[in-house]
Image (cartoon, rainbow, N blue to C red; front, top):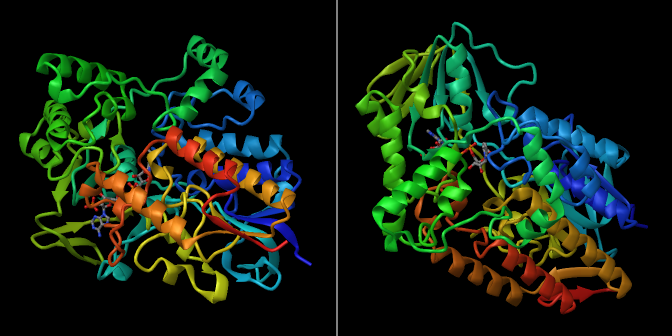
Length: 532
Ligand code: N01
């Protein structure tokens, strides 16, 4: 006797919707969530300044027109506390709480061929069985802290942006060191600088950041997007990124330079990263085209930052713009004009160690009272490997993916029957509006389970042949772009020893959705079906 139809791992945007969708389809479900609240990314990343860089009207569920109309977002780009309130509202509205177990981490799951079910173990000591295991554990949830000699001896407090104390941190009168200048570092830095006596930003790689131009939604704006929401969402689903954006449809290299400058200036003033990178067709495939955008952005940095030496250090070089996640901030560069902020170049003078009173680079010592690591995550595979998942024959997922993640459609992996991964490696995932991609995956899995049942199948797993063809296709699409050229978390370069594999599907959300639908319509082509 199997306990449940589905165990869901995690209760962020994915897990919350999975619980709702599977329950609505008549399945028995339990989601296990390690945190003492729901929200996933938006529960854990509560550092000051945390804000989504996709607009609130896009970064919200589309499955319920009623929810869409009743919820009011206060700002163009939603701040972390507001997103968390929204997700709690969703759980309240749809009665999801009885099916979510907080404070409980899934520690392992083993496939039992005899009962065609997963045996799932949790951190509370419980084990239970489920027909299907759905990972909603998140693409960016397994944090990474540098292995820094002497950190244990550091006298002050240290924090990682993704495990921020719920009670907040008072930096008043403190000398603070910030390591990491990706999206999290760029968001938290101005907040720390506003409070601290001094902020030292330890930069290894300069990052491109475009303005948000964040603002409250005016009532008329909200009325306007809500009045056409259904049509807008339909367009988003078919779009490249899961957000409709307007590009010129022309290559930048064919345009008169003054027109390019005018358009980029307009888009810089309007704010947002996607409209910027999507303005022309060749920016993410041609280095020469990319250089035009990169130089435009470097010019803006030189305009904003008063000290030319600091501005020069802040100018990203050596990788294509967009190949590391494009950051967004209204105040990061200007912050370096404050007297209490210093930029430390740890590319040329790396950090050697921590000591009780601060950090030591190869040339200097920095006395610090607190340290903040915005050093990112073991992306895409980290959270899956943190559980001991064992498929058919007891094979650990970690071994099956020793040379890099292998999936079919980014949804499932050979040798692991009845395991689904929401926004897994090999799907558009982190290269899309995550919320729409999550909805697409959850609905696909829900419909797949219903189909299996109605056709008398107990198990489903990709064939090795379909999987390798898919991964080849994913790689072919990716390597036709500039994305794999940067040392980013997209390729696992931020984790020592991780295989360098680019595992996001870059052909666009609309075409990807069509492929998934075609696979389903063909009786789950590429999957082996078993049992009855
Ligand atoms: O992490 P990151 P993040 N010594 O990996 C540096 C999403 N997100 O948390 O580039 C010194 O991007 C590292 O340097 P380098 C978004 O998808 C979204 O900022 O490797 N430095 C880099 O500067 C994003 O892409 C939002 O040389 C070290 C930084 O730490 C993803 O999450 C907000 C180091 C890590 O940057 C991850 O962003 C926040 C070391 N040993 C996050 N190790 C929004 O929606 C790492 N670094 C706005």
